Image (tube, rainbow, N blue to C red; front, side, top):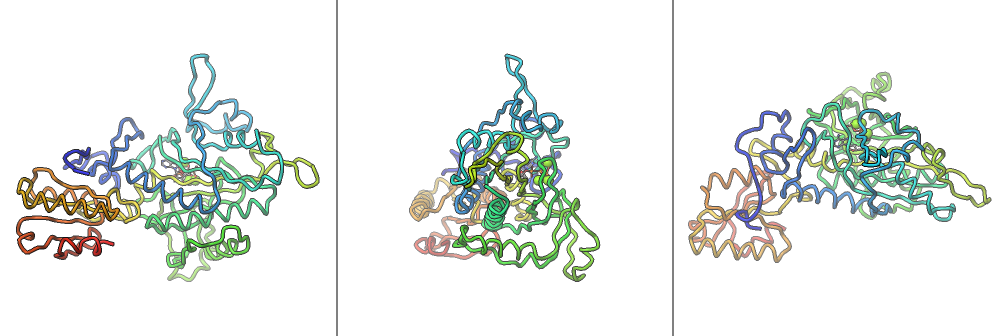
Length: 439
Ligand code: ATP
Ligand code: MG
Ligand code: MG
Ligand code: MG
């Protein structure tokens, strides 16, 4: 992609309204633009990151046995009356009336809709287990939308819902998502710690929040440092192996880790002092087991081997991709700008032409772009007629993992410069060696 033809509205000035570094950098790097309080447009570069985050999430949801669908964002109030949550949900719900004066709403979550879909067709324990997920926009009229996409009113959520015949099955479904979440956050280059959590308005009795430690995090959390070095379950983990998954979850819950609502000072005091970590964190994921809370009032029942119908046991599992983009920036940046982890980088390489209009340099850049793209690397080619200083600043700001700098001086020696954005290391390489150096 040529930058001259792309849409990358970067900002030189730091926007005043942005209180935290991720919000500042996401605005400055032209990833997002606020259209109304807590409502953002995802500009082309930001959308590429968001899509990459979703790709990692999808891969791990699919691996764990969940099945993707897409439910409507606009839901009927009547469905929420069936579960009893329409009045209980409160002001965070955006309530709308259609032209016939019927009450509808923009979904803040989708337990009711998915339960309705399930009950319409599933009848027997033989059809279980099931886990259905979607990645879709949610709306919550947050009292204090802030920090950009970290806490917005319209935001993207991956929400999965599991259906099992009994509690033991539901526990396995919960463990599947627990392990999928460990792999998802690690795959995004983040250290997320599962912490015992309150179940809030969704209800239920087994719940973990996945928390990334960050000074600017809105949650107060308490945990054992040991978790920071725990191994992530490998890609070939057998999600059908009930005992193996339980073993992973047991290990990952064997030390102290709790959010402030669930914090027990006495238990925390038993953690060796050097390992005690009281910090702030960002909630990036949340998993719940809530039994028959929705299936019972909404009549989502299946017949067991004895022919008797019982309400199914359910759980729900959320991840915030739009919040995650901000959390990744919060965890990975320097004075110059963003440093994208490879897995979510919007392009792999920033190709910088130091002398646009010089035929030899232009030709070399075109050849290098073709060579990188042939090796399946994505390239953002800065072909603008700008000073080198401005190009370097843009490349650092937008944080692509590699910078390839091409100018007449280097070319005269048969060399171009390769810079790793993360560590800042530079080396002179021959164009033919570029792909092997990057891979
Ligand atoms: P919070 O405590 O931050 O308000 P929550 O507990 O209300 O979040 P959940 O209902 O557990 O959120 O939703 C699942 C996930 O959706 C959260 O873990 C988070 O990653 C994401 N999320 C929730 N609210 C927002 C928001 N306002 N903006 C961006 N992402 C959000
Ligand atoms: Mg909330
Ligand atoms: Mg929360
Ligand atoms: Mg939550």
